[in-house]
Every structure is written in structure tokens, then in C-alpha cells.
Image (cartoon, rainbow, N blue to C red; front, side, top):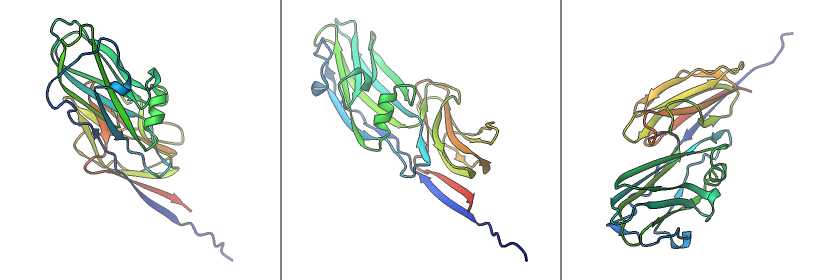
Length: 255
């Protein structure tokens, strides 16, 4: 008698509806910086609550969160330094995205990756799918001299800093066939490039890339897992998946 061993295919479609969180300009006019020592977050000049997107399916794993800051200094007056710190929820160094100082006027751009090895405490916090409060702290070496007229922050599941695929942005933990359709986007003045990176059984990786702002439909691949990766040509840009049109991820497996 013939063996009755039917094999069926399971097809799943997941939508990764990433969001670019933007505080907008937190300074409606021009602010004068009075403190000469670092304020506590309870006395922060600005604050904003934002939520980083996290998919409910545990197979879609955020691996990198990128943030970008823009501050415009209109005048230093008799001061020589504007100091800054941006902290999240808790007033300590482990929850600090940036700290430092500027000694000139003009637009100041910063960016930061957060993942399991870089600013891991912040990454774990922001990656829990809940809202978190960002505190913006400013102080100068001379009181009431420095003025600023722009403070804005962006944060998303994405990548910044390097023009290389050195860090997974989104991991797809699935053994079988994986395909992906969607867009990648770039925040900033340069060029961002997203890539679909299937990991085969021998751990080799091929990159199927597309420039930000273009449709993204690489070939489906049989693999152990896959990742969305990104790179940027300008260090303070962010390249990120989805937005507008989300990533559609199709998973196929035998049952």
C-alpha cells in the first residue's frame, strides 16, 4: 500500500508597521540657558514621551534602535560652552543617550545606536513597547548668556553612524522560506540603504539592497533566519524600515 504522508505548507503574513517618533521642535521661540550646573531631570528645560515600535510576534526581534538630536544655538554671549545631556526616564548615566558640550553657534546634530552591546540598558528599556520620557538638560559656563531656538529628537527601529551593514536592525527568527516587501526610508541629508539579509544553513549571507525611498522586494529565500540591515552615508542620518508603507514579511514552512 502507498504511504500516506502528506506535507502541507503553512503561510503567514506579518506586517512590521514601524514608526519614526519625532518630538517636533520643543522650543517654540528662543530660550535663554540659566543653569551653570547640570539640572536634575525634574528641572529639565524640555521633555517628551515617545514609544518605539515593537511587533507582538516574538519572531520579529528589534536589534537596533537609532536616535537623532538637533539643537540650534543662536548665540553664546559671553559664555564659551553649552553643555547638554539627554536622559530617558531615570536620572543616571546608564539612561543617558548623549552628554557633552558645544563651543560654537549653529545647528548641532547628534545620533546614537542602541543595541545589546551599545547602551544596552537604554536599548532594553526602549525596546519594551511602552512609552518613555526623554529629558533634555542644558547648562552653560556663564548664566543667562546662551540662547537656543530649536530642540528636536527622533527615535525609531533603524540604524545610524556607519556606512556598513555591521548591525542587524530587525531579526526575523524563522526556519523556512522568508520573503519581504516594503520600503526603507532615510532621515537626514545623505543616502540611506536598506538590505534584506537571509542567513543560510552554512551561515553565509547575501545582501539584497535598495536605496531609501524606493520599493523593496528581494527574492524569497530558504534560510535559518533573516535580518533587515541598513547603512548611512552621513553619520547623523538614520535609515529605517517601513513608515508610510510597512514591511510585509511572508513566512512559509512545512507542517
